[in-house]
Length: 346
Image (cartoon, rainbow, N blue to C red):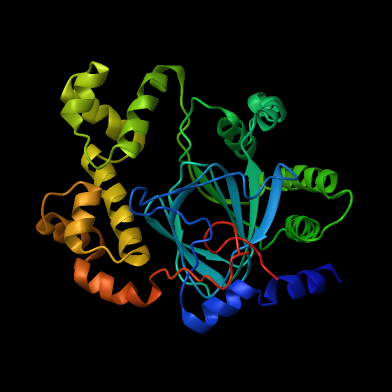
């Protein structure tokens, strides 16, 4: 019965999906400024006005552009499948798999069709959440440690875990119950969401399929500002400038960055620029020269080499491929809100 009710809620086309299905275009609900912030951070305020847990459906018939979050996000593949790019790594999420991401993960999702239903479970990053996660500090399981780390401010937040719940009926039923309570308007919804979520966390440790986790330790705390600087200043920052700013030898800092992230300084910068360039091609009408200027390149040849190296395609070919998906703001739907392809609308 619960599954039938939930399926009716999730497969019903809302106004946004009907428009996206008809036009192939995507809404920028929050009027995000992709020119000045090509990889935007999705804000909390749209989702947590009534609770610290929010449930939404990913709107279908479009893509989700590259972004980070101001919150912790769970993506549950209720039906179908999707290709996600997590920190620029392609991952196929299949039915009954659950992806959990910390807030600094760069995420984008390819086109989702009729059967591709993603349930989003969003956790607000607040002092209250940090306090409630305090008991997890001494817990040995990976899920508890992930949530505890996510609640800390001075810690890396680019971690993710994938769970396979296809053989765990209890976990799938809990997720379905969580989705129903989150999508319906009931008087005791907030307390029910909290209790169901707590029960779900107990079921997850034995279902981990994949993890990408890098927790800080006291010896590495001093390097967190450096990693944040790379993320925020990718257009202009150089390794030598960072080394001077933070008082390190350039070669030592380069080795330490590779040790902490598994990638060289140049690759971190390249991948950040690539994600920004892809968003600009999809979301704006910027020329190649304008994109180069925004992401910190001096000429088009650098952009050409970037796309050939990581995507094996030229920038012009990529832009031609995605041009039909470019954002068009629709003034006839002024009440539509929330971030791109996320907020359910009836």
